[in-house]
Amino acid sequence: MYDFNCIFLMKSRNPLISMGVLCFLSARRKAQFKKAWKNDPLYPDWQKEVIKAANVTLDEATAHPALLVSERGRRVTWQETCQDLPSSTQRFSSIPCVLGQLRINSGRAYWEVEVGDMQSWDLGICRDNVTRKGAFIMSPQNGFWAIRLYDGDYWALTSPETSLPLRERPLKVGIFLNYEAGDVSFYNMTDGSHIFTFPQNTFYGVLRPLFRLWSSDSGSLTICSAEGECTDVIHKPTLQVK
Image (cartoon, rainbow, N blue to C red; front, side, top):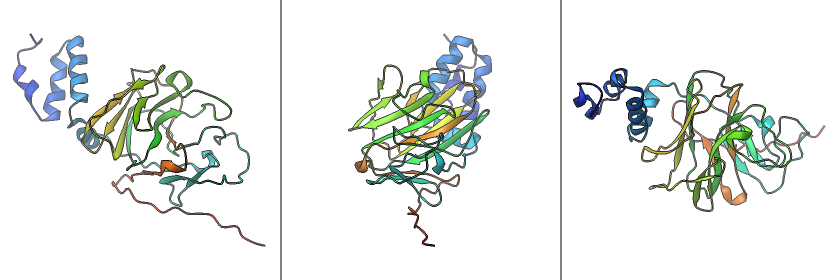
């Protein structure tokens, strides 16, 4: 039995009505309802209505030398020959990652990334002060909350990793972050299905979007603009001869 006398509202497809029901539920029922609602294909669309899309661009200063960032900072591509770049404490040197310019220390945010038919990638968030040199494991314990596609298999980078059986291959992935709630969720924006939500965390410090490629076969990751545009042009810098 439900803990209130308006059970008919639970069947409502209107997310605002459905979420309004939560105030009448016990804590246990609230948790059950929220979990079920997160798995509803309407959930990401509703989130997009109540959360303003973040304007995410890539921070070239953090990019591994094998990664080429587009001129507008929305696309990252692997290149065979590493760029000769100045050493920096901000730059990833061992794992081919790049961070977003966006810095989050409160509130909610979401962004979408077009992955297309890529074979391998990592997407998620990390703390601004994560290790960027030498060997390290990407896990929540080390300040990373990400999912991975590798060789056709999807994984959540928990410790140990969690296999993710997806019913449809995502062409676009949505990342939804609620800082105060300690919640980061991933959705297949192709069919609206829920991919994974990390167990509740207590975030502290600054969080940033995270992107990783694996090899030249990876293809490109493209961040969609706040207006929903998912196109960009790769810009290769030219040397100026003095």
